[in-house]
Length: 184
Image 1: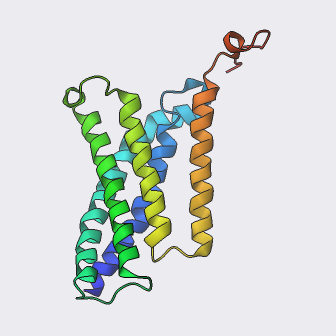
Image 2: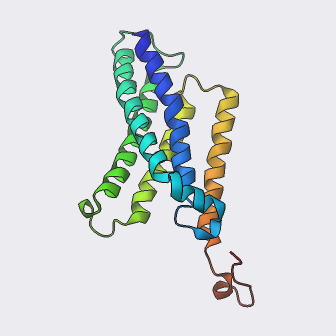
Image 3: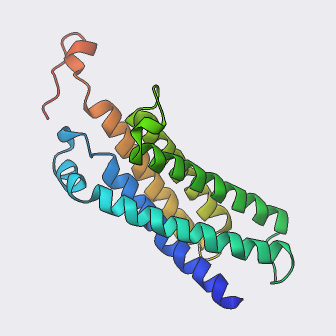
């Protein structure tokens, strides 16, 4: 069963960066004031997101099979406690559930009537990414101390992009008297 563990690790090591790129390319997708990021995201976001979802689904299936083997005692447990491992697996399942709901909302917009719009669907995708980040940091056995720091810095960059998206499109002259409008 060692091959299953390696396959679980390999899909995880590809899935998280792919999810990260899907989020980073999705934020400026409909934000023309973000310039070159907007142009680049319009070219690659759907393809990157599709790849990320497929690899994440593969990791979910393989990871669940690996988790069952750990919990039933058929393979040695990780270096941390089994309840902690199970909690991490549940967080991962939460991430996968949110991502699948987001994709279903995108593929069949009629599936979810109002108030389900693109903002709600993307909120599910961002929530899935947040859960995936917690899952990676908590039980990613290949994630060392330096990699954890890198994941947290990358997540901070996503928060920055979200704030830029939120604030960047505001016409400040309408909000603050005497302020200039956006130059973008």
